[in-house]
Length: 284
Ligand code: G3H
Ligand code: ZN
Image 1 (cartoon, rainbow, N blue to C red):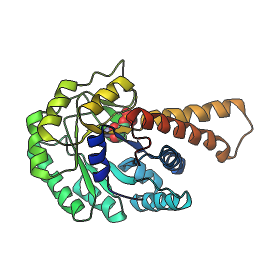
Image 2 (tube, helix red, strand yellow):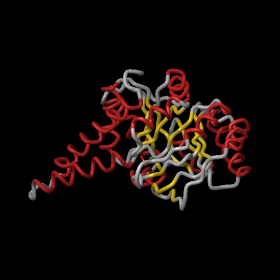
Image 3 (cartoon, rainbow, N blue to C red):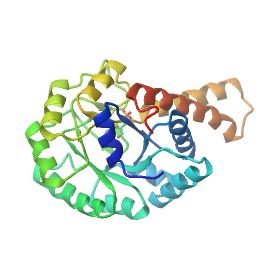
């Protein structure tokens, strides 16, 4: 069923597992992720960046594609369609109006009072329509589409408390050293800060930049209140590798379905592995 991520977050935090947000880039990503969730009996969050939504046609196309696949595939697990790194109130509103069940407002690069103001506006609009809201503080490193950082800035615990108390968000993404895209070396996450922020806000926490985070760090983050982990790059790498291998083996192939099937299989296997790592398998 298509739902907001509110109940998923609460249950995940209570029971000590995290729900994966897997970003969709096209039809095959969406097919693979939905099938992985159904087979794993796992709740799932389909992440849609503004860039990916634009690539696929727009927010409406995304919602219809997801609903169509859920019907054709008889998907019974909880699924949220979530705007990833929403850049403004207007974008969040457009996604909600098109049928997204969850949004992230990322006003983290603005001063705190502006971040709070915009986030509050989004929460008001979203909650009136049963849509959940994620907000961010600090700076996640690296780059994802139009979200580009030139460094990593840790979220400040006091600011997190203020943001949570003044906005009524459903979950919080405090940047604590994670990076979009591949890590250079081992990730170095701020677990002490994570624990502090979790204790002081009592919010389910979100970990961005899930690609390349070792399982032991994933488990530690979950034990400290992380209930959602975002993964995008790892699926892109797996899909592209499968296509490269397929094309290298067969020079004469021209039907895209021939090489997109192995890409889809690779995404599905990657997602299933993550669901097991995150502990969400069997929780739907
Ligand atoms: O918002 C999406 C994520 O934070 C994805 O990060 O591409 O490094 O897995 P990733
Ligand atoms: Zn992110």
